[in-house]
Length: 60
Image (cartoon, rainbow, N blue to C red):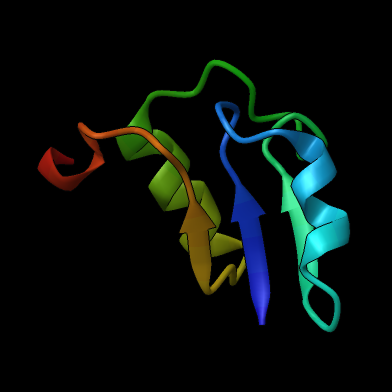
């Protein structure tokens, strides 16, 4: 599964997800993107899931 970690998620979590392709928002150059824009970029790059602790994401 191709996973994207949001800025609020520690990068070190990548090592806890073996067997998955995991990238971090900072790695992708998407720091400070608003949620709506981030979701569009994520879909365009074929990520299957976003791991976040952002409680406002459901409103995007």
